[in-house]
Amino acid sequence: MKKIIFIPILTLFLLNCSDNNNQLTSFDITPILGKWEYVEYLGYDPPGPYLIDNGPIIELKADGTFVSPEVPNYPNGTFSVSSDSIITFTSRLNATTYSKKQIINFYSETEMILDIDLSPPGQIGCIEGCAERYAKVD
Image (cartoon, rainbow, N blue to C red):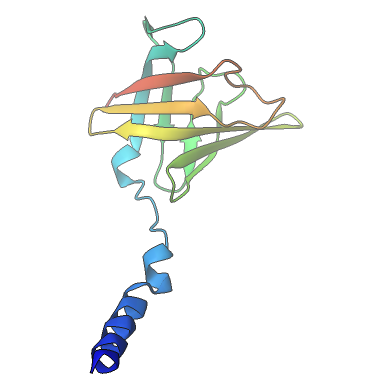
């Protein structure tokens, strides 16, 4: 009798552990689209935060492109967000391709925090670790 009860319970357990539970969902970029102003540096070394007056503005567009004319190495390019909330900015200036990766730590309708610079070595980014807070412009 114990074997008869054990087999259905084992079957239910195995069905619930299917590969579907391991699939990652994609990141919906809709909430982060629009213009964002860089308003605060949240540094770790030296410790922040530091407010930024009239910080550069970056515009994230629905077609996966961005415009940020106030940032010399990243005036425009493409961006993508992976399912684990890593945003990658790619820009080509003259013959050099720049890439910057950060984790989207938090976002709302009015605020976004990009944390932990994961940029490849030799690219522009934070060596000491930092985060950046952006405020929605429109």
